[in-house]
Length: 85
Image (cartoon, rainbow, N blue to C red; front, side, top):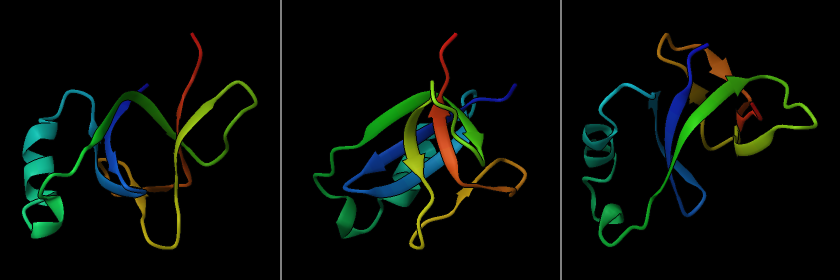
């Protein structure tokens, strides 16, 4: 199962990439504007993208009207969750 790394700050999703991808480059691109100056990003690794969060799942991001949660193939999901092992 593919897991993803998310970069989040101030309620904004800056990047969502497969765990093995270079998240640093995506963060640099996403924060190249003045908005990114002094921004404190939360990096969440190992998230599973899903349309339904289960009772044991920790929701780390939920799609909103302002942001789409897309996988590497461009498919849209409602949630990024951490699932217990």
